[in-house]
Image (cartoon, rainbow, N blue to C red; front, side):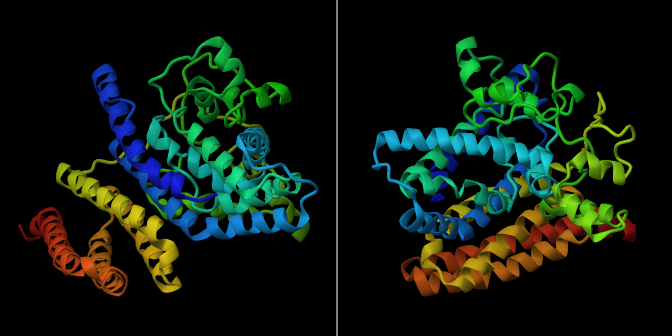
Length: 414
């Protein structure tokens, strides 16, 4: 569960996304990409990795304690222990994923991965900020089987990375023998679809055989419509992670007894939909045609947002790489700054009037915190980071103030 495999994969992710966009642009005019949607996917992924950097060491420690003290027998660490771990991890993942769609407590987190109304490689990175914390206990029987932490970590990394490439339309079908055994882009497109016949199918991560075995497999026949059955209609990264739990709270108010309220946690999303009037016929419904949520971000702000994402990606990689060397104060402070940055970018793309204040406040927090950290831990770089961060923050602040004047203040004064 060490996050370093993701750290090393980040450049590959970005290059492959650029490649997919170029391919899609020349083949389809870029219609499978929406700027705001893609940036939101990536920013939610940034937040997810920031949470992982804080928590994965603790989760792995929990796994190791069970392995060291409570395992029933031992499998000697080797290449075949990794293969065994992959199969076991993948099967447990199937059930964790399936319950993630069937129980509200899990779906409230996993829904984040399904909110995008596009289907491209950026969607693979759109992961809940805390779904791993909720689902990890489901994997804790594995150490009892004697699978050591390193083999488990390797299996988790391989299974996680495998799922990246299946989030694309660029690959139509794989060979039949491959799609009989393994998950593929066609199989996973079905999983992300809101077409009524496709809902709640193809839960597998690596081996689609699990779905064939348990009767949850369905083949791709008609074009998929993506997203969730009740649109999010927001680029707000924080709201994306918590909106379903807010809906659960509203739904619980419709229930009279404590027992019913607790049971809501373990019921399915369609039950909550009936409580909230989102499902009218008592079943799982989805419209055949949905107008995608969209906003118009001016070109100069698209450039601004893109630059912020690149800087945020650099900041995330530095955070993940050095987190073990930082005190708890810096770990939490930088985590808060990362989440605030993703929230602010979403507000920019939604044209919220308060994003100017948040952006300037973010710069004012970033400069002293960043440079204080470098002064304490990386003194050889301090003389470079101090003037560079001040200059960049000043440029971005002027950029924000100029946008505020041109788009809001000058029209009022005219």
